[in-house]
Length: 111
Image (tube, rainbow, N blue to C red; front, side, top):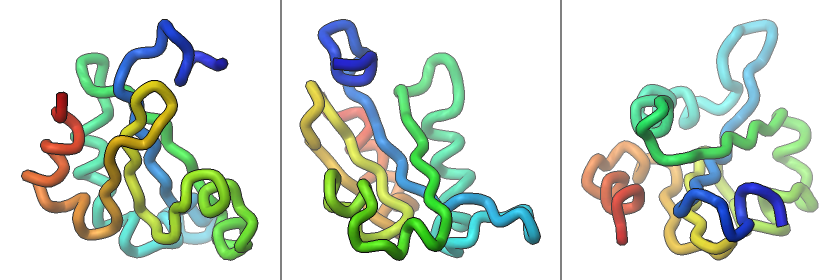
């Protein structure tokens, strides 16, 4: 077990599946990811915020049907936020649902 899922891991853990930044533009290639970026940053960026792991995907890697996001986590759309407790998924928000402040707070603060 690693630090994310071991007995000493902070619970819950959030996985944020995002597009990578395209060097030519300096922006994420996925327009939906760009739309939710400030909301995700405000939710997870800071010492007193919930712990999140950001998983970035290059466009070519994302399109492969055998990428880990699809095969291990059943993530079909970017952006997606998963809530994990003891290594198991206990919640998920996809695309524009991330912008729904009530849904996001419910995902983050659920006990």
